Length: 366
Image 1 (cartoon, rainbow, N blue to C red):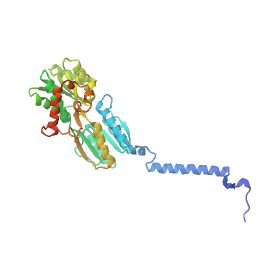
Image 2 (image 1 turned 90 degrees about the vertical axis):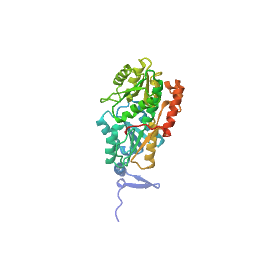
Image 3 (image 1 turned 30 degrees about the vertical axis):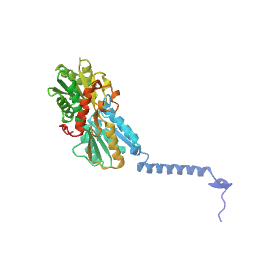
Image 4 (image 1 turned 180 degrees about the horizontal axis):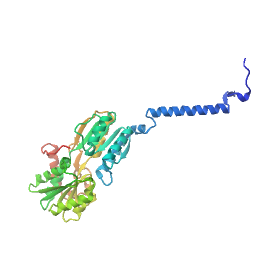
């Protein structure tokens, strides 16, 4: 039988039904507890819990092609993504790009977070979206306003029938012109932007066959964010006699509105959002893209597990593309066309004919 050690050597003693631990035992338990905690943290992190990737699991990331700045189209993409995320019980984050290199870097950083979905915007993501979607088949992607020729199964595209709303603006311009000349200032001389400019001219000629139209393009590295160059081209168009100018330059549209405002009896038309308040008494109407609706529709498909690999077009019939004057809150929009109810009636008639399929508008694929 072993001798009982002296009391000071006991690791534990029982007193009144409780264990009383010696200082040495308490130190040992603290060390053991720390080791167990470290082990559990490592195990959880290795499984994705506690890492930025896990934080992103209920997250939707919006990656722009350029700085948002004054670009209302990109700003609407951010707002639409945030609203859709809230509706789907997720958080939202935005990565703003500046050039091709940063677009790739931001997209790779977004993928590293493993979010519910990554929302991309404009044709400048066509190649990157296809490339990285194929490399990361478990990550879901949404591309708004464009689509690559071949769509991977984890990519969903939402395009717009901007030619339909542009045609309606052309109807307005053809009826409102006093000089018989109209013009478009667009970002690039490409099939994508001709979906606006060509349809605008067609709409004008549908109500005024004698209309003469011109098209000028900003070009350069900052085609969708150069108000100075856009204004210069608008003034050129105005000096040739155009009194109706369609602005399709994204963040450069303000320059077109300035040119119209400082010229006598010249009216302008905007895109993407209601731009009438930017130049009261100058902007007639706008070709609107319901980015919020499209983003929510596509992200809902992601959340519900609906198969991807799709490219969907949203136009007048789908309430994805329209003009400000035909929206529910048109009366509060401040657009010049509201002063011309006879013009609005012709716009409604043209809208109904397009939706019914009685008017078909030629357009390039985007």
